[in-house]
Image (tube, rainbow, N blue to C red; front, top):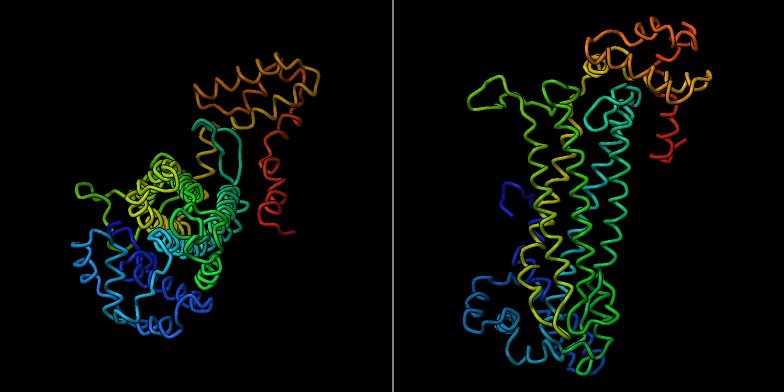
Length: 435
């Protein structure tokens, strides 16, 4: 991912230096386990740790790989240059390249997960704060983009909180599913390496042993992981789309913070565009782009092939780096979001009283009018409001058929905004698990 959409902590996980350090740790811990089993001399295992503080030379490893055409062999050759050929001769004993590559990849995904989990927790805190701030800020709810019935801005934030809270649970589950390692040798049978080596390496690397690894760790785990990232990206887009809608000039119920010196357009100085949430919509597409290739990686030939490798070299860093950046950006947008309560009321009253139509419909049916006739009476008055911007309550009060069923007091009572917000506290208690 390009630096523009990257944050340093996540980028560092995917650097060649970090990768080679993880490879080294896997190999060194495997040597320790082999020595404990008496398979290799303890002094050789101890010698490998001489490279503990070494900064592996990425250029040198690339130079060796240009000849060997094999990245793990290139690394092992470079490691021997630091440790000594004789001391390093038992490194990689009974192992195969996938033991190193797959275990390393999952270590990186686990570390990336930890950052993403923190990102989600930060976003949830921001959403909760804004939800309580605007718990009773009334705005119009919309269906099909059309005014429906009153809701509150706090419920909008709470809805996004609940969605992201589910995503936090999904991310934790995805982390657990991906946190496996495999040191099982060629075709995964442990023929040349004791399962105790795998157990030791996994314990040291913060993983659990893969129950059966067929030389590679099963890719359904990775498919589930990247699918989870795709769902989180879609939720980011869901929030971004709502903010973009609210910032439209004709709506202007909320807007991204516009900083001092910021410019909205090279041609039109008056513009204040929702550039951050538009950017988030695009970044969500990039994250979701990884989901199908991850799914297709599940089907490998027999005990292994490397058709998944080129895919994962790209989607591993790109997907996690992009999502980390997007979550951080969205948190900042929510923290600084400008909210305009008066515009919300003005928009709701654009067609005066119209959004109370269901209450009048229900009142007529409760007064003995058939549903078909009640719908006809309410709709004919509502359509007048659409056409002339007249007051819906006044139209109802002037309708003799409506007045035959409902008194003036009964009609007026149906225009109380508080009716639509009376269960907000109940919803908040459900969402935030608070009394």
